[in-house]
Image (cartoon, rainbow, N blue to C red; front, top):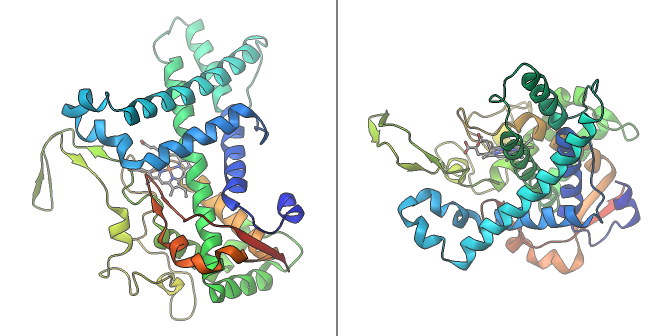
Length: 343
Ligand code: HEM
């Protein structure tokens, strides 16, 4: 918010949102934040962005295992492998630092997920159990949280800003509702949420319309399975088509229009829909859903309470391209800049 005050025009919002969401994840996982000018952090963001941009390409060896030898010869595959290794090295270095910190203090209680894991491992090893906790497990969990928890929430917030700029009437309604419920001085809180019917509908509609993870993550059937009369053979790859679900006219009155009414009753109350599944479904659905929803609600309402969002002058004529987006693993908004006018 302070940065927006200093430079409210021509804002590349995704950079601010990445810094915000990564701070939250970094605090949870490593008990620290990274300064924007930290080169290793910048490299992590660049690597993470690359993995999202290459999209389904990074899943090809998984989808077609019999081609994996051939695929491994392609320069792009080698770049993907190198990028994952770089991220892993960054994470391993951070874990090593936490290990040094914890081992210097036998009574340390820990302040983050990494500390908690290291302490549990130390306790288990003191009892002769060297199997339950493995460093590699901690590396993978931390990596997944870092990669999956930074860009996704940041891009969802970026889409919300884009939708507010593109659909000013919806922005008027959200602003009016936030001012009526929380006023203009104190920041909106989670306790306001139940009264912010239209705002909640706009957040859901933005997630539906954007469909950030159009194909979620590919899965594989581990055994022959019958589903609604269809056989899904063992080993079949399954790609959940969330974009299709979110644009299906069977479930949505105006599938290709930004229409918050999809989540409102006739008398204007918030009505969540079971057909909105941006976090996918089942046992491997996104574990970060509640954290993401919390970050999105608090950030979105705090910004719209104070600022009018609109496209910067050079982008006013590119709204269709921005809304069409660019599809990788995530469906990104097109290149954009926004102006924030203090209310
Ligand atoms: C609005 C933000 C987010 C969206 C739209 C989103 C969406 C998704 C989707 C669609 C999947 C694939 C699930 C599947 O295929 O079954 C997924 C997986 C995952 N997400 Fe999220 N996510 C978001 C935020 C987060 C956050 C904040 C975290 C971390 C705190 C996170 C951590 C993960 C992890 C670790 C997985 C892999 C789960 C597994 O393989 O079992 N996500 N997410």
